[in-house]
Length: 184
Image 1 (cartoon, rainbow, N blue to C red):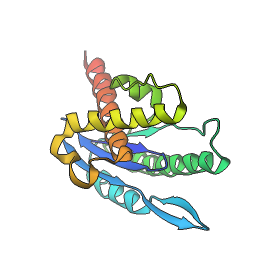
Image 2 (image 1 turned 90 degrees about the vertical axis):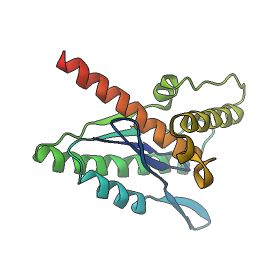
Image 3 (image 1 turned 180 degrees about the horizontal axis):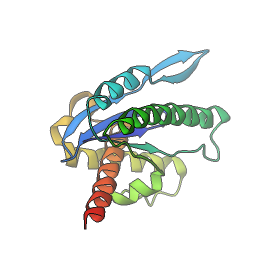
Image 4 (image 1 turned 30 degrees about the vertical axis):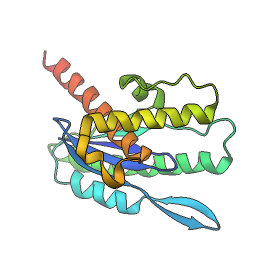
């Protein structure tokens, strides 16, 4: 069983854990400059995910269901939607392949508020920017708590990677709870 979390934000990434919450891999989406703007290039991440997914019998995707927020530009909302759409397409392809055989591939769309609540990530800051930065720091702390040495080095301050791994863990908890609930 593999559990993927997809952070669709500006510093988007994917994270992967197994059924025992063991760290498998995490990778930040590449960013390229197009006409002076940063644009995500998730293709290398997509290839990595597909390489793992086709070898597993059960793959669970948890994709962050983000939307543009007030005060952010139209291009930000577009970037969120584009990245979310790419990951939904990848997850759907895996679903078709796995469920055509003997596999399983559920897809969860989860809002930031839902998965933040699961890990106790909250903020009392009063401005949107301070609140966002405070929550990013808390996500990094939670990821370090769960995966320790795997979150060191070049991953230590990557909020996108921390978010992606926590999304994968959120999906793992939800799927296993549903699986064990169905067996009773």
